[in-house]
Image 1 (tube, rainbow, N blue to C red):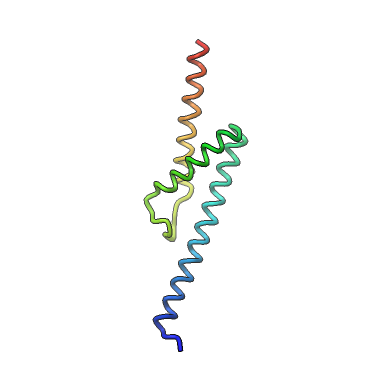
Image 2: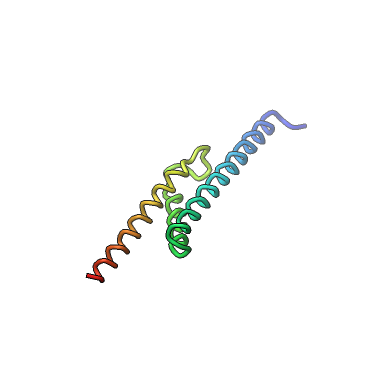
Length: 99
């Protein structure tokens, strides 16, 4: 016979797993969209680096990895800031070399 305690734990674990799966799906979708946009604008090499930036920013996020609500857009914004700095620095180096 299953006790009420065991049944409750299974419900919580099931909810937690479903939430984790949903967050994983949202993160994958956000990362995929970001990498696709960077690829279109700056090419595959820059997209690879930007994808690594995105993953690093997701690791730096304050909320616990299995939390119910993570703001994946803020990860994209932070990775975009890194991209902008890198692209701006490259452009500055090119202009300096040409001068």
